[in-house]
Length: 312
Length: 296
Image (tube, rainbow over all chains, first blue to last red; front, side):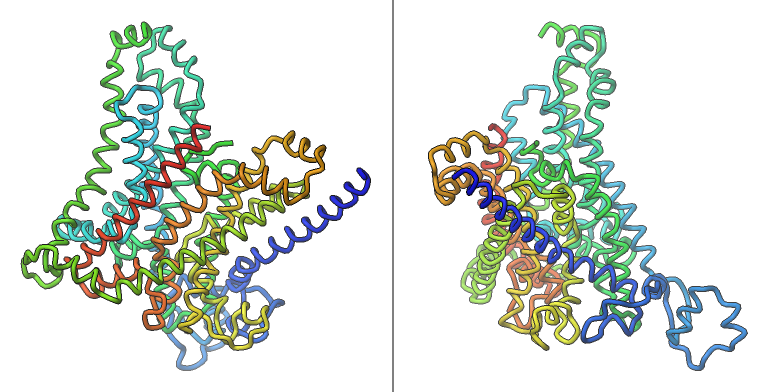
C-alpha cells in the first residue's frame, strides 16, 4: 500500500512540476514580449505571425530619447559617415534628430519625486512606528486604524479637493505638490510596515542602554535604528516602488513641468512619430528597476503587501 | 519603569518623545487626507464648477438625489461589481491553484515564486499599456497564440471588460498565491500525517485540514483585492478609457470624467462621497481581519 502511495505521489509531483513550469512560462510571455519588442526593428514589431527571431537593435531607445522630423531627401554620404552611431540609426529610419525628447525630464521627475517622498515617508514613518511600538498610546488601535484607512482612499476621491486646494496655493503641476501627496500615501504604509519590524526587536537592548545612562533619544538613535536597518531598507524600496508606479494622482495633478513617467509614456501613443518599439523601450527602462528591486525584496514581499501584518 | 524615570530625568520625558514621534505623522495625514475630504463634503452640497469662476450655489442634497436617480451611475456601479466579481474570483482560482502546486518539493521554487511575483510589483498603468499591445487584433500575440485570428478585444463592448479583468488576473493572482503559500506552509505537518494514518481521502484532507487553515489568509487576500478592484482606475483608463461607449466605465472612471474633463465639481464631490462610504465599509472589514491575523 505504502509503495503504491509513493509511486502515486511521485507521479503527482511530476505533474505539479510540469504545471508550475507551464504557468511560469505563460506568466512570463507578456514580460518577454514587451522586452523583446523594445529591441525589435520597427518593421518586426507588428508582424503577423509575430516575429520571434530578429537582429536586436536599439533604435527604439534612440527614438524614445529624441525628437525627430522626417527627412525630405536622403542625407549625403559624407554627412552620414561623420554622423554619430545613434544619428545613423535615425537616418536609416528616414528621420533626422532635432532635439532630445521630454522623456528624460519625465524620467528625472519620477526619480526625484519617488526618492524625496520615500525619504520623507520612511523617516516620519520610522519614528512614528517606534512611538507606537514602545510607548503606551491611548486608543492605539484606533490611531493605527486611522493611519491605514487614509491609505485605502481611492486617489480620484482625494484628488478632486486636493486639486482645488493646490490650485489656490499654486502647487498644481509642481514637484512639491506630488512629493507631499506621495509622502502621505506612503506614510501610512511605512508606519505599519516599520511597526511590524520594530515589534520584533527585543526591548531588552533598549532597557540595558537606558540603565547605562543613555537618553531615550540616544537609545532610539544608537540602538534601535541600527537594529532596524533591514526593515528600513525594505520599507524604503517598497515605498520607492509605490511612488515610482503611481499613475492616477500624477495624471490629475501634473501635465508638463512635474509630470512623471507613468502618465507620460502612454500619452506618447497618439503622437505621430512614435511607434510600438519606442513605447516598449520606454516601458522596458521603466520596469527594469522594479524588476531588480523585486529580487532584492523577495524575502519581504509578503510582509510588504500585508502592511507588515503577516511576517515570516 | 524605574529606567524610564531615570531616562526622563536625563533627556526628554517618554511622554514628550512619544508625542514628538507620533504627532507630526497624524497631523500630516489629517492635513493631506482628512482636511480635503471636509472641503469636498461641503462642495458636495453645491452646484459648482471649478472652471466657471462662479461661486458655489448651495443646493442642499440635490447632487446626491440626482446621482442616486441617475441610471448611468447605477449602470457604472453594476459594471464595477461585475468587474470585481470576475477579476477577484479569477485571481482566487488561479492564485490558489498555483500555490497548491508550489506547496511541495519543486526545483528552483524560490526563483519561480519571485518570477511569478514580478507582475504584481509593476505599475498598473504601464502593465495596461503593454497589454494593449498584446491584445492588438491584427498583430497581438494573444490572438496569435490562441489562434483567434483578428478577434477584437478592447474595442469590443462585449469583451473589453473581460479583457481588462484578464489583465488584472494576470497581475494580481500572484498576490493571492503569496498569501496562500504563507497559509499553506504554516499548516502543521503532523495533521497530514495523522490524516494519512487514518487513511483519509485526498478530498477529505483538503476540505477538512488544508482549506479551513488557509481560509483566514485567503480571506485577507480576497477582501484586499475586492477593495482594490472596486477602486480600479489606472488599468481600465489606460486600456480602454472607459469605452467603447461606456462599456468599461467603472465607477472610478465615471468619477474622474465627471470631476475633470466635465468639471462638474460639486456633483463629482457627491459621487466621491457615495464611493467613500462604500470603500470605508470594505476597508473596515479588511483592517479588522488584518489585525486578527496579526494576533495569531
